[in-house]
Length: 215
Image 1 (cartoon, one colour):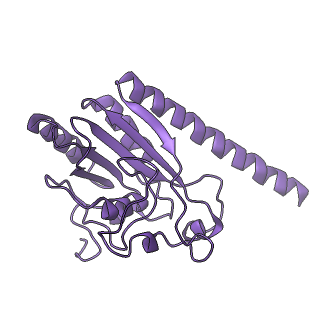
Image 2: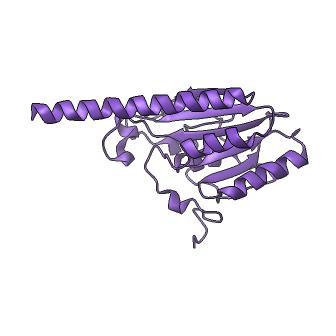
Image 3: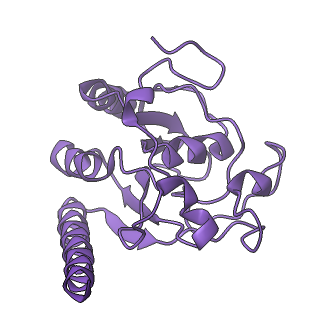
């Protein structure tokens, strides 16, 4: 039994080291493209001591947000997620964070980003639309951001119980002055489908949503 325990501990250490190495590599790639990058733990849910349900942070879409990054990269969100897709008009971020929880990488851009650049972003989205989401957001100006909410490698139990045990995952965010195919692809490929609740990425197809038929 002691040997098994040692093996389990070593396996956990290896997973953590691999995750740290991957994060460092993505950070370097994004910064080489002129972007800022950081990992930011989401704030715990308001009812962390009881149910650990992030939905209770947003009983209404108009509720005041409380996120650790802008644009948000995890944390409180509305009970319904947005239908997966690429949008030219803003989607409420409280719904989009729920898409992040389902393993999505989100492409955000400010209102001053040129249409030609938004066209590039949509072409990038089309390269891998499953588990990817695009929406403009007020307050980002001329910049573009990529966000994701990934699982905590330290949690080894049932993914759906992570929050109740105070494992809230990790937010990943890069804010960039322009589109960069190589850097954006590196971010997407590293973090897409890494849901902190273990949601299957197969349900993140374009057109799928809480109130739409997913084919």
